[in-house]
Length: 272
Image (tube, rainbow, N blue to C red; front, side, top):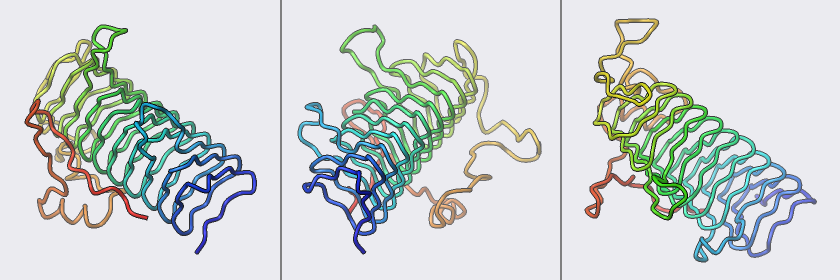
C-alpha cells in the first residue's frame, strides 16, 4: 500500500517512506529522512531538520511510529519501532533510542544521548546531552536531566539511569549522576550524587533512605512496590511480559570499558 501524503505537506523526493505511511498537513520531511512502514506523522511537524552537528547522518524512524503535531526531529538520530510522541516535541541530533520509546508533550531531548528499549517519558521532560538511559525507565512530568557542572561550559557530563529506574515528577538530576537499576527517585528530589541499585532516593539534596524493594503499595501493604515490573505490565508487549513472568531479562546492559558506565544494548537500526 502506498503512503498517504496531505497535499500541503512538503516531502523531499530524497526521503524514504515505507508502506502505509501518512503525512499530515503542513509537515516537512527533509532529504535523507527514513520513515518505517505504518507510521503516522501528524500536521505541522518537521522531520530531518538539517544541522551540521549530525555529521551528515540521516534521521531514521522505525515502523509503526506516531508523531503528533508540532514536533521537530533533527537529522542524525535513530529510533526503533513503535516510537510514540505527544505534541510539541523537540529531538536534537544523534539521539539513539530502542523500540517502544514514548516522549510526552513538550518533551525536549537535547541530542547526543543513548536511550534503551521501552523507555517512557511524560510531559515536559528534558533529557540533556550525553544522557544514557537504560531499558524500561520511567520519567514522570517535569523531570530534568542536566549535564553542565559549571554553566556555561563545554565540560558536559550526562546523567546515567540504569534499567527500570523510576524518576517521579519535577525531580532534577545534576550532571554526571548515576542511578542504579530498580531505583525510585521521589517527587521534587534534587539528586547530586550517585545512588546504588535498589535505592529509594528522596529529598533536597537527595539521600538514599532505604532499599526501593522495601516499599509497599499504598493501597495494599502486602505488595512490594518495587521492582515495579513484578506488579505492573500495562502497555508492554506480550513477549516482554512473558519474559518477566519467567524471570528473564528482555535486554541486558553492556559494559563500556572506557568508563564503566552502562550502555543500552539497542536493537539494530530499524528496517522499512
